[in-house]
Length: 341
Ligand code: TXA
Ligand code: MG
Image 1 (cartoon, rainbow, N blue to C red):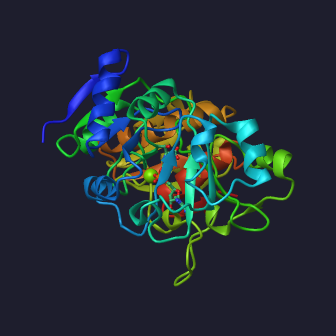
Image 2: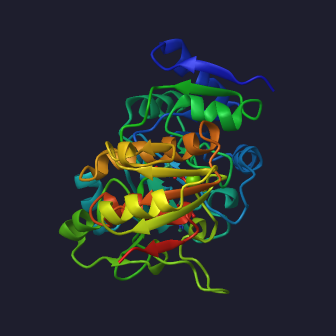
């Protein structure tokens, strides 16, 4: 299959993407978080194609994207007050809400669960495509399963060229990590995946919100994941990533003593000068928004540009949006953290 790269600035591109989706095809689309791999959410066969294109395990459910709040009616059994409050404050935006699912949701979307994940993205191109297609779109991140999520159209082409009908290029993503996922099908509501909307912000609206233990910890052997995506080794580059937790001084010391061919560093802006190994910077030490924006591109570069075998990474502070950065990086590292004291 020939994958067309479409310029999202051209109105004809949006119409083309919409037609492909209406005909049961797959299109890579920009959102404010990461690029999504979209299909008509109401067409089970089209949705099944997403799993094939990504090599995604069938038991990992998808998020359904809408472009108007009212579109949620029918997709879920009911819209509780808590969902309305969250939507008022954070939609459109990087928040996914899990609710008991409505009858029209195909099993392929919910992977057999009785809940469904709904998101109203703020990216104008995502909204335009959903509007033009006239149906909600199921869309996971547009990477091959296990690869870092794509934050540019070029990343999507790297993984999906020849596997899907088209990619809409809408430029780099503003948030850079996937949406925050909160379930309202639990009491109290539970954060399943941190993202651009922070735990602190969710608590301002909902009061009590628990953080699922899978956010910071590996899933114990044999235990069922509240969010099936959490159990897979995610976001992982080919390189073996190790997080070094400690001061900059200790970090520089550790990296330089362990320098040898194949070793690289994932550090904050400006720190590379002090290191005797090749390094990729992923934002300012105090700027977790920038870290979020740059992390996935940095992970891809470590593989594709530096061909690193071992990567020593600076440890993000797990607060605010930094919690999302930490959550992704610790998965990329397979939970390997060395404390430098
Ligand atoms: O920002 C995002 O959310 C991006 C863009 C494209 O919107 N999408 C995305 O989708 O990250 P995906 O499939 O890569 O991640 C969805 C996560 C997975 O961990 C999945 O297990 C979880 O949400 N999920 C989906 N439906 C669920 C459900 N009903 N219950 C629990 N977890 C669910
Ligand atoms: Mg994903």
